[in-house]
Image 1 (cartoon, rainbow, N blue to C red):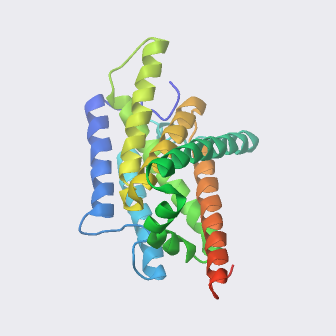
Image 2: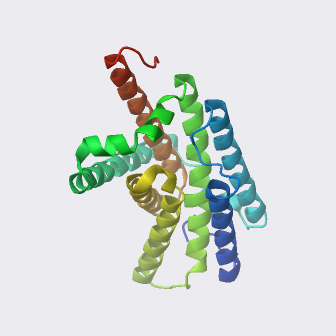
Length: 254
């Protein structure tokens, strides 16, 4: 059985652990603590909230996997050739962006065009554009690692273990597809603060990265793709915002 899959874990325990981890995540993001990344607050406070959220979620996963037969195996964090990781990371990056370009174009056609969507997401884009250039790579490395470890490593593995055991290739494929889609929906639901389009985009990313993780039996390509997606996106947003600001007589500098 390819990882991520905690093969020693009974289905009821897998369900409890997946549910508990998701509840914790949603409470931290949307509850009274409100660790919403890049919320309207000072940049230092926003970066601290990202660090605190990721650290707490990684600690929760560490508590759950400490008794697994192989925590590296159940999280799909075993060693992989660097060239293979780089190639499949690029594939995940291109597949995610390709699907999301199609999704975004269709959404804009249905919801008033590019200008309306930019106006609706202006506060969110402005917060992202304010991230210092020197902080982008450390931030995306940390976020890519913790989000993939928690969702595609831990939650996806627990969902696969929680579903009924199967013994045929077709049934295994169906089970894995259900687990990938459920995990992606849970991942997207945690990004509702980005608006409807952002929620759909992150769900699509969750499907691609989840399928890639199960297919390759490794989390590293998903981590690499996630890092590339976030880094590319932040650099594009920053460059566009700088160009827009320069057009009105000021702006950010890289």
